[in-house]
Each structure stands twice: as C-alpha cells, then as structure tokens.
Length: 187
Image 1 (cartoon, rainbow, N blue to C red):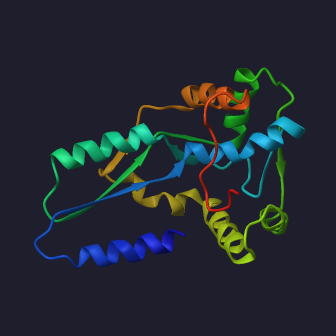
Image 2 (image 1 turned 90 degrees about the vertical axis):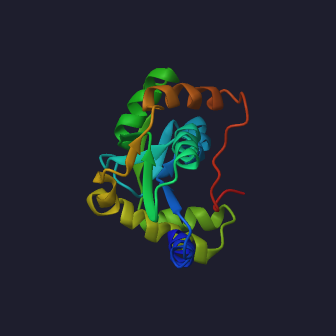
C-alpha cells in the first residue's frame, strides 16, 4: 500500500520549479473502528501486533490543520511533513475503552499472521491484499524502524488524543453517527 505513495512522491519530486509539500499521516484513528464487531461479540480486540507495541494514530482534523498551514505557507522546494495525534499501545487503547464503554472485561487476543490473513480473506478481502496487510503488520511490530523519521523537526503532533477518540469510539459502539473504518479490507 505505502509503496504506491512512494511512487507518487517520486514522480512529484521530479517536478521542476514547483514547491511540493508531502504530508505523511500515520495510521488513521478510524481504522480502529474495524474492532467494533469483535468488541461487541466477544469483548475482545484481536491482533497480530503485540498489545504492548506503541503505535501512532491520527485524526483527520489534525491532518487538516497541517495541510491548511502548508497551503498558506508552502516551504520552498520539496519537503516532508509527518503528522500524528497520539501514540499508544493496544493495552492503553483497551484500558481507555474499558472505562468509556463500561466494559471491564474487554481484553486483547493475540493471533498469528496466518490467522489474521485468513480472517481478512474470510471477510472478502483478496488473498493478495490480505498478504500485503500482513506484511504491513510485520513492519508495525518494529515501531523504532517504522517511525524513525517521525523524530524530525517536520513532525506535527496534533490535538486529538486517545481520551477524546475513546469517547468518539464509544459513540460508534452505540451505533450513533457514521463511524466505520475506511481500509481496503473493509467490505
């Protein structure tokens, strides 16, 4: 998936005489809505990424703030701008949801890459796409590599933190609003 964006950036870097600011958000908070069915059915979040791995997440409004600033003040040349809202582990996400959902038995279930891939295929994803998502999950297990560039001065940490998103997630859990994940794996 991310490889396609790399190709697009490479093409845009070849533009002469044009200032280009690349915005690179991390995992979208909305992707976490994919856990709603298993939270409702099993009071569990299943993942092939360990519950202790700290991952970074972003809200659309935090991306929009970065983009607005860049539209108003485009840096000269080609520049890269990372954005994320908060960093937390699945354990921390579950702890927040246990409170906001009043679900103290919500828990994490570790699954293998093969189980994750089989679940995606069983839910209608093409095998090739499921394999790509599994590869991406393997990369996410090493956040020190995945997020290495986010230590630069071109990284913006947004305002929407886990506590606020947990409230939004609780609204989605109660089937209020139009909250769902927006991934290639979704049906």
